[in-house]
Picture 1 (cartoon, rainbow, N blue to C red):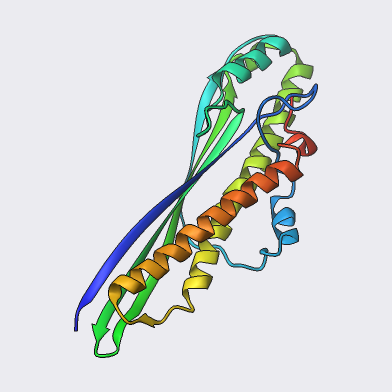
Picture 2 (picture 1 turned 45 degrees about the vertical axis):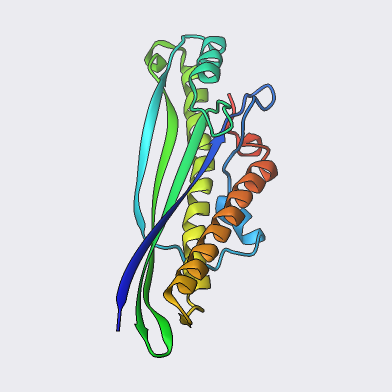
Length: 215
């Protein structure tokens, strides 16, 4: 009998940005990420364990609304297509599985998915130097942007759960090479499906405009 272990990783990236006077180049908004996913028919899937959410901040400057908007436009994170956004989420999934061989072929003996997520958000360094009204508007916008990005985090969690659900039906294969190929094919297919769901989430929420993530 032979035993083995295999690990595969797959990333996904999403960005977001909006402007109060209309949606600025970019994406999203978060109100009700869970409700949106429920509408897509996947809300009942249980999320896999999270290796951790890392939040990274980039500094924006300005003491007027116009200066702030310009800083957000020019300093926001860049997505894989080279576009800047006010916020961005990258979720990464790694699946690890164990197998053993016998006369019947190759048998799956264990399968786990681990996810890690990085969120990038703006931090206004001049917020204490502006009017109470503008500060209040920033706080509203920051909460809404975080809510929207949390919707993308949830997509990664549901993707991990879906990989586990689908691979649960895989018990054995004639060879370990075939078993490995089947499991990796499932994982990569789920990644692509949920990346598309992230895009649909942005389209459904107007890239964040319907969730008030605009300033």
